[in-house]
Image 1 (cartoon, rainbow, N blue to C red):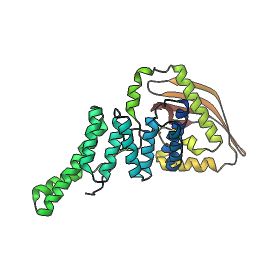
Image 2 (cartoon, rainbow, N blue to C red):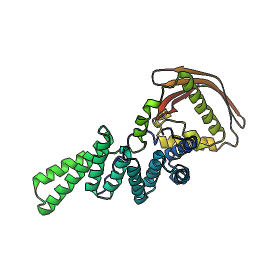
Image 3 (tube, helix red, strand yellow):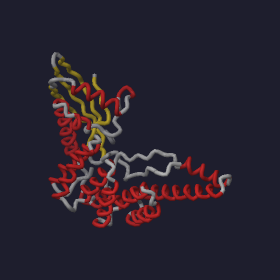
Image 4 (spheres, rainbow, N blue to C red):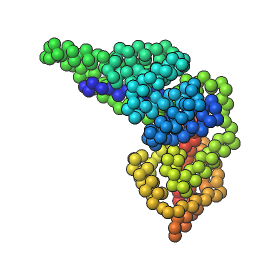
Length: 310
């Protein structure tokens, strides 16, 4: 078994990703940071998050994303300092404890990681990720103990069998794509009210227009950020191949003009269907098509889940 183990960095997103901030300025920057993280633009995200923190020193979301960015670009020692600072400033939030424990576990400091995860669980007993990671810590510690036993007696069948079982048990691929601080959302839940269909429609129409403008401007970061993490890619394409295909198709055009008309919105149980007539112009090509976009809500944002045209 490899000595270095990958653990969950935070609660499942999908994500990578964003809760409302406490200030208008912070909300704007957080949304941009979310887009940059989703598209793997960690260096740009780091610059923006550091700039934002200068004006929002006590915003836990900004500090949390700072730690996430530092982890993704390999600045683990800085990330440890960031998450430790968060646990001191906001001891009621379990997520920073979890991520701090993950970083210590990757350094092989399993006892310290165990103690920090126990603190996360004490802060929020129903925090599933910390329970799973704690189990992984115990599993890793057990594997090291069996390895030590085999160094003493390499033919010990009991140790060989149990180590083999643990190796198979620990062969998993954790999903660390999405990150967020759920506790803030829970804390502010009383203040939130369920949006009306009119408000949802306005949000979706705004996303639709931003998607159209990003397409026209060949702004791929903005364009791709309009799609959900589980978007149904056509023709069995992977996310990477589809994004590469769309990037080549869009950026290769000199000028793109897109207009939408006859837009209609239909609400379903967990989806919102938006149909419209799309007029696409680029060079000598003038294409009119009937289009349907299926939107789903993902971490407070309405994103495109499915796209069809005829």
